[in-house]
Image (cartoon, rainbow, N blue to C red):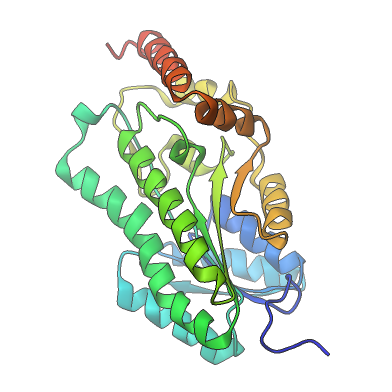
Length: 284
């Protein structure tokens, strides 16, 4: 008989996904449900989240949507508490909500910095703080934080985004070491280019550069964005194996390895790419 004090992979498990209304969060929620997981979609875009939950239910899955602001700790604490009260357990929390601000740092306002730090980093901290002690008490759980390939390499034209994602990677690696002795797993997702709304700024992010949407779209297409549905399948397979740092698509692992092997060479390629984009879009 299965122990009640063991994580479920993924059938009959319970998972919270922040930023579950669109993009990577939506794809993760749908794939979790397909694998038998009960999913709670937490998002400010509650109508979209409810639509996703309804589609999952129509397909035979179990899901519900709750309006949650990840920057507000009491809101996150309430989300986790209500989920555990309803389901009796919490196997997974995906701290996935995030935004992007695209431009060189000299165009940022302090409000831009505060907003992206609050959502991309403090939102992850709030999710961990809300779920960690409950997971320790029940004796199992898996915390999955969404960073980015930008958290593993230089990220010009997105310095604030890269800074928050580096912070999420560092937090996740350190917490993984501590949490293991408690029976808690911690992984960090580092997506490459995935076909999601964030490429165009998204609902709450912004592109401060004066670039037409068509040109911006063409620029990202050169990186061959992966479908979020394929991304979600690959990610959940890696999570089932308790991988620490999950980089998808595989091509971006090569870029990560290059930056690990020679940070100087990684900086050189980032500088070269930055200058090409500046010239292409007349950003000089």
